[in-house]
Amino acid sequence: MNTNGWKPAFDAVLDGVTAGAQANRVPGVVAMVTDRMANVYEGARGVRDLGTEVAMTTDTVFALFSTTKAIGGTAVMQCVEEDLLDLDAPAKEYAPAIGELQVLDGFDADGNPVLRPPKSDITTRQLMLHTAGFGYDFFNANYLKMAEDHGQPSVVTGTMAALKTPLLFDPGEKWEYGTNIDWAGQVVEGIRGKRLSEVLAERVFEPLGITDMAFTRTDDMKARTASIHARGADGSLTPLGFALPDNPEVDMAGHGLYGPVGEYMKFIRMWLNDGLGPNGRVLKPETVEQAVRNGLQPHQKVVMLPGVIPSLSNDAEFFPGLKKSWSYSFMVNDEDAPTGRPAGAIGWAGLANLFYWIDRQNGFGGFWATQILPFGDPVSFGAYLDFETVFYRNLRGS
Image (tube, rainbow, N blue to C red; front, side, top):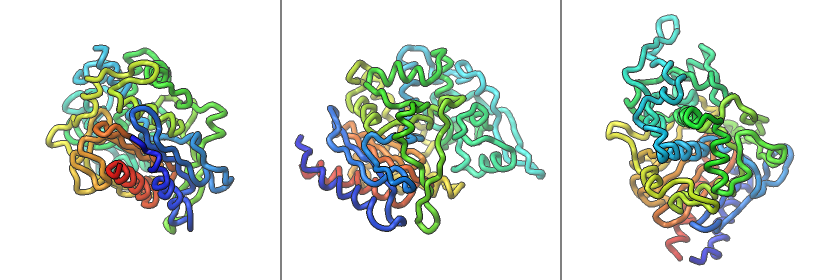
């Protein structure tokens, strides 16, 4: 398929979102599209930092936030393939600390947490599907109260204490997006007897040819890292000077990786190629098929993410009004999306307004990377949806 004619349409989206007044733009963006063989579009516009005005480039390093989750989930599925992990066994068999956690049943008259044992053990399947009972303080008011009144550390500290939160409900009761995949990473570490960073380097990155992605940045990666900016109420953008910790206590499978978009595209291509990378196989085809299908029960629904901490997230939802489900570990759109994304495609996002999709049916995937808080930024999110829409218009036109 000749995709050379698509470039001007993609460029126009990137140009449009990095021009004009701050309130209507992003500081900088990198966006790419790949087919099963190679990238068919690479674009970079704007700057890495509004203070320094250093240009955004395709090798810019991003805090990948929750786009890390699918990579961590891949390491989990490798353990399943090798019969080292029973997804329905208690997760505490592999990560004992998760067995110590209790359910938060609200707060007493003095504001202290009311805790009780869970009715059942957490399983790794529940962790992969976000049904284990964990949340995030920026999406859940009870976790926010635990943070503000009881010192629960933020997950971005990269500490084990940040993971040892109470459960918000009994395992399996419903779907809620949270620190589940961070715990799944602890399951992998318990099985492999190694840090997750080592596991990913050996079993995911090497067969995919990924050399520029890590939980701890090299000096060269630091020099190429885009700054995270805050969007003010008036639309203005301010560099925050915030970064996820290098050398974290815990390699956070749910959000901790840094890397350029081009490296992530290698991961997307693996899913387009039934688990095969340029240097070897990452997953078996049958595992890929298992991993991209809905795993939720009928009573477990993917719902809107409420922005409980306005500086970190707006209320956010992909394709409101359309049915979505969850796999291991992606969102699945169960109906054709307004952008043109077909039913059954997978994708997700990262807190600083990074978005990707993987369309195995048509053999394409894309990634849109900015570094802006709060999540669900109307300018970046809206432009990403425009980018995806342009892709499908061109695909159909070709």
